[in-house]
Length: 88
Image 1: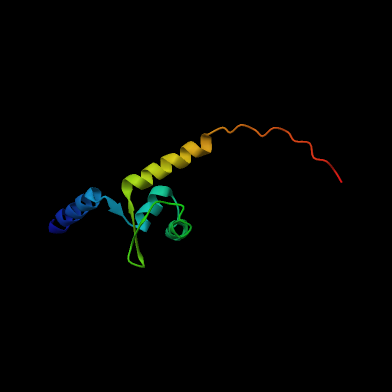
Image 2: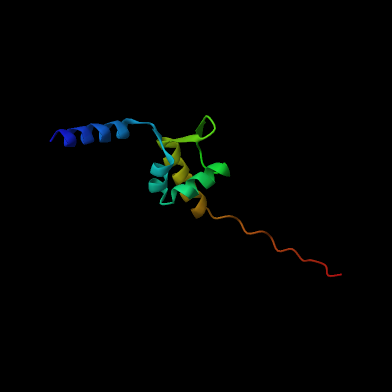
């Protein structure tokens, strides 16, 4: 019984945290943890670097990033006008 209450306290603390780790980001995005670190290396995902090794993410920034990616994939771009190339 005591163990269950401690687990509930731990879950409550996690839900209150603004920053999350790469493993949690991987679950949200449906990627592997390695892929999340690869996105960090490419600076393709918003992150906070603490020291040389530790990387944290703001939960709100990750959710916004996910929404932006969804919007970008549904945006219709104007087709380029046809250009005639001159053959040599």
